[in-house]
Amino acid sequence: MAGTALRRRLTWQVAKVSAVTVETASVRTLTLDVPDWPGHQAGQHLDIRLTAEDGYVAERSYSIASAPGEPVAITVERLDDGEVSPYLTDELRAGDDLELRGPIGGYFVWEPEDGGPLLLLAGGSGIVPLRSILRHRERTGSTVPVRLLYSSRTLDDVIYQAELDQPARGVEVIHTLTRQQPPGWAGYARRADAALLAEVAWPADAMPLAYACGPTSFVEAVSQALVQSGHPPERVKTERFGATGGT
Amino acid sequence: MDTVDGNAIGGLLQEVFGTEMTGAASVCGSCGAGRPVAELAVYQRAPGTVVRCRSCDSVLMVFVTIRGRTCVDLLGLASLG
Ligand SMILES: Cc1cc2nc3c(=O)[nH]c(=O)nc-3n(C[C@H](O)[C@H](O)[C@H](O)COP(=O)(O)OP(=O)(O)OC[C@H]3O[C@@H](n4cnc5c(N)ncnc54)[C@H](O)[C@@H]3O)c2cc1C
Image (cartoon, rainbow over all chains, first blue to last red):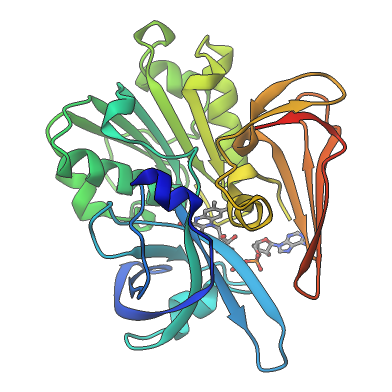
């Protein structure tokens, strides 16, 4: 099945927004009704294309937030000065059309047979593909141990907070809040770096399979720290979102 | 704009090569470093996309899309796939 999906021609198609969910003040999840969807893998993304009346076209990538088998959804963080994200978070309503192509990618994906233990490292909206992986693990009955380190600016910026507060068995969620912490916050309050990873990540000899995702600066920092502490580069998969919001 | 990586051009590569390429192996023609396409450094500035080696910074691939047609230069690569 994966084989056919890979060889399938990637074409633009018009999907319909079926629901808009408020995740945080600046983040929305758009559930999409995609007429011709061949199914996706956890960790893949899709491309969105917006065309202005004068013909100007802007394309951006968004990770698929839902697990394989669930309706396609993306979760978008608004960058106030961005070209595309404010339209997706503020303008789109259920029933609106949205042009997209996908699913895309075959590297930053996880299947139960890839095993673990899984070390998931998310900065800001980098949680999106990792949430698909978490849901896929649960839906397939995988018992691979998971440790998720999730870096956000404040508690209010934590995406999927309710879901992450009730992790599946075998999943440990560790938050770090880099800008502001609520009173009595017992979690971490600093940037994800080598020192923090030394505390929360499995050591290299446990041979975890790591997935790091988020703003480029976050991904560079955590992936370099892992490799420098002895994790083999081929066990550290990365996906850089560019200059997205904060961690 | 910040650098991204080969994942960001998965759609473009699939359009150009007709198949999923982010997991494909690449070898730099300058320094010989090998890594999956997903782990290469990508600079997107319309209409062009420049892909560089993360070890020596050499240009490995250039894609330029004008009026729906994409021109591809892979001369910086020793091998792909
Ligand atoms: C594989 C992949 C998956 C992604 N998944 C998600 C996801 O699940 N959720 C999500 O929210 N985002 C995701 N992104 C990021 C997304 O594709 C967009 O980059 C993001 O939404 C910003 O787009 P924008 O058009 O709103 O901002 P843009 O207009 O592209 O601007 C982005 C930022 O860069 C700054 N900027 C723009 N141009 C310049 C310049 N020339 N010089 C300096 N700074 C500049 C802007 O001020 C802004 O802060 C993903 C990216 C990739 C590559």
